[in-house]
Structures are given as C-alpha cells and as structure tokens.
Length: 185
Image (tube, rainbow, N blue to C red):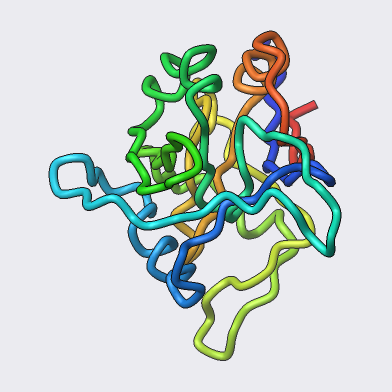
C-alpha cells in the first residue's frame, strides 16, 4: 500500500508582514522570473520592501513575508532553520531589500501533476486554466516532491507536501499557513 500524500498551498497568516516589489508593476515580473526555470546563474536581485504596517496597524514579523502564492519569500531565520529543505527542491534567489535579507524561493520541479479530468477547473476562452475549485493530483507524479509548481498554469502557485509542513512547524517559523487542496486518502 502506498503512503498518504497530502498537497497543500501556502496562504499568508493574517497580521504578518508582506513583501512587495518596490515597483508595484513588478508583480508580473516576479511571476515570470520565479517560474521553476533555474535562474541562479543569471539572477539580478529584484528590489523589494517589507510591509510591516497595514491600515495603521503594525504587522508581526514573518519568516516568510508574503508576496504571492507563486513566489514565496524567506528571511534569514527561515534559511537557518529549513534552508536545506528548500534547497533540496529549488533555489533561493537573493532580493534587494533594505529592511533585512530575504530570498525568493524558486522550486525547480514543474510537474505535470494536475489530473484535469478529476479536478474542477475554469478555463479562459483559449482553454487555459485560470481557476481550480477542486484539485485532483496525479499521485505517481507528486509522490516524493516536497515543493513544486504545476505545469498546467501560466502562473503556478507553489504546492507542498506534508514533509515541508512538518519542517516548517518543527522549526517554529511564523507567517504562513497551509490549506490542504488534495489528498490520496
């Protein structure tokens, strides 16, 4: 019998810091740069800023200040605690941030993992998937991958399995929560 596989997507924990490109129009640039293709050899750090207050309210320090579901950002404490886990599944790309050292995580596994026939998807007129309300993953494809992107999306979120969630919680890191989107149970 195969083991249980659970797939999660990260979400920002409410009340914690965010990370934004200094140029607000650069969110699309982020999506095109952190797409699973190896970049470390040609990477030029993107200018970002830590957003530590919102609507006049102070935000808690995050070890993963939220940028997007497709571009996770980690600080030095996260790298010290789970850097080896992250590097086993991708690359850490330094960002140009005056507040503190942060890195964008680029998972280098882009997998044909979405079982489109068993998922509930919405498509554009051209047939491209733009929303999934019910995920079904190909078990044999995602097995053994801690962090990955899905090739069915133009801009894929980072998907993760229980092993990453366990490492995050064991390291006592803050700023992310995880929504389970699929399980083979």
